[in-house]
Image (cartoon, rainbow, N blue to C red; front, side, top):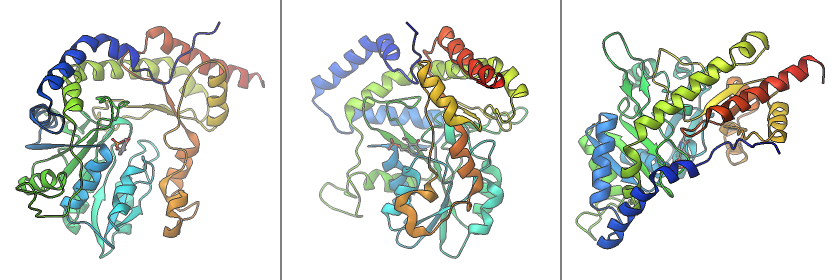
Length: 385
Ligand SMILES: Cc1ncc(COP(=O)(O)O)c(C=O)c1O
């Protein structure tokens, strides 16, 4: 019987820290405090330090981190926010929730991140912010984007949901800037499959600005301070104590797990070297500027993506597609009147990308199996099968 390689498997990671998690939860059960509290505060301190920002605020999800950041900046009805359409829906959904308008900017086809050269032409008098997404674990090209934001007086919210610990553009003698510390506010998701994943939904906002920090802190509790006195109209987006306790345990291993992901990515790179030079259109992930890529996903790009995906599924290899439909072509955004062809790089990427299994516990054997099966697909193809 063929051994299967799942696209993703959290079980081995849980097994390795099961006792620690259980005792952390026991501690919470004894206190009977379930909302915010000292565990959340401890996690906020760790994440702020890790992202090299002054403040971090735990919230209920990555989606809420985006929503609350936009709210803290006062973005609302009719305001325009520039973002990539090649992302998870929450990036644009958070903008729309506030009555603001997502304005889609095409991507760089190599990094899949927003193309800074295409931003300026989309700016109008109503533009308030740019929301770059650090897709798959690599930072967007922030320097030119920040320059535009500065000139045009726009806010920058980083959607760093997939990029905890990623660094942008190290230079000789200094490490790169961390995802989340580059813009005005940075947003993270601790969705279970993220590099640092909770046992449910959880998220975080980071910033260096004390006003934004205070505002997010209040907005996550319905804008109230003191209790039952409401300064702003906020939402309920508190981080659970249990999730924070779990994340504090897992945080200790984050660097080790990131290194493991990077090693697997390097190994894929080596295993696929021959294919990328011999097969037309077979593309491996590109690392720009020697960025610190944390490989939340390892995404290859091939014109025959659907056939390859089907073949791999038959061979017991799990893969996934991030993202099959760019946001400007989603049904719910038909009122924005975009058409196929408007953002060609995003559209083409959505037809060609394929995410391969990558997680810290993926074994060498499993990885070899993934590569072997992909090579088998191209061998058959070369033979005309
Ligand atoms: C790029 C991006 N933005 C936002 C989110 C939303 O995060 P969450 O699922 O925690 O709400 C995610 C994660 O799913 C994401 O990948």
